[in-house]
Length: 542
Image 1 (cartoon, rainbow, N blue to C red):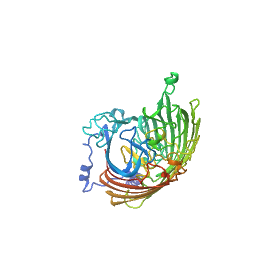
Image 2: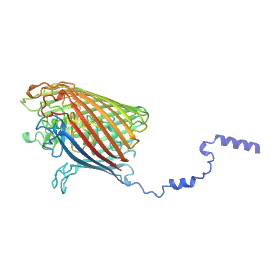
Image 3: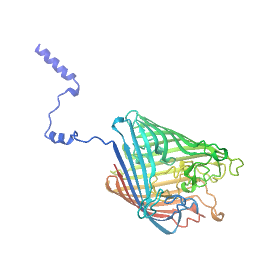
Image 4: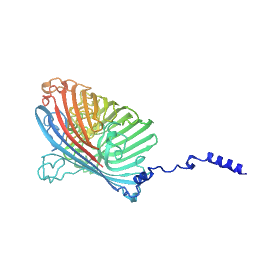
């Protein structure tokens, strides 16, 4: 009997799961480890959280911008023309200024919601040193005494998490960041967002509406509804006070083919019933394809159209592989997208085009190689193509249509890594360059950008060198005295040195030179090659 019981005991031990096996005794270091790992006395996670962004930039440049109509803010492409937009000119004179920005993000997740909801509020304070005080206006308050009312609304929204997991299912209601990628900006790093999707080249701003983000296994989905403008077009003539809207509806779907590699599809639709009466800058700059004041500030095409209604549809595909270098040393991202639509004038007897047909295309491909041990050791090569139209004044437009037709700006391509050919995106109130919208004023774009970066001191001091070149896809119309212009926009050479003083606290030195091409022949406001030098201080605080 004793032998039988011993055999049963041995068989029981062999069949038992590993968790049932006796654990070894504690080692000599167990006491110190237990004391260090004890979290019983830690405070509970705060219901209030603050993300703090502070930025300063000092600039010396020969690009002289006149922010007409928008005090303290200069936007738009160089050479757009005197008295139009920011009227950025280049010449033998230079200017210098310092500007700063503060953006706090407040998040409140009370305990009694049990992880179901988070309230967020974000505002912005911008100004140039020495400019204006003791008044009420945005982008002002750097003068003596300050005493300025200058708080700009960025975001005020509520995020609902039906599954209590913000990374699984989220519904955002209210004013929120609205981008052309599939990621939720509330819980995703901006550094990842600008590398993926359509890289904020079509949609990159804040908007008020409703957006749902879902992430289930290999599948992700985004659906959004965004009213981007409103007007009362028939109030004066017909006594009809009803609001008409510009609204945008989007659906994006992404499939993770394998870890770190995603393929996404997009379908967006914009409908505009405002007859050109909605504003991008209230009371001053109308929005939409009929705006005569918006194109100089954002660099979109200037159409011959008035009082239109119509729609635009975008169909696109984008992909990203190892965008954050988590699965290897090579990253690849890109997109291809087409837009088509039609607007019709509602003004009887118009002397301009009665309608406008739109059909354009854009494609982008970027390769990045992490050649060293740190994430700062990167070589990148990017190519961008957008279709163009050599006569944007006729009734057919063959170029790209972005939300820069509705915002100041409505889209910003952040990840181009240039300073002058495309605007330096580390900015506050001055966003000027040779090309500020990927449509390039409707003439299209063919651009290549090559950069190489190396950590001189790992994770501390980084040097980046870059070169970029661009030309238009179509030939622009003649300039002054009916002199012909060419298609070569120019070539840029730049260098940037960044010192990571502390985690997410960076001091930077940046310099660039742009050799302009014959695209600017017969453009009187561009009589010298643009150059600029910047110093920056950036601090993200959590």
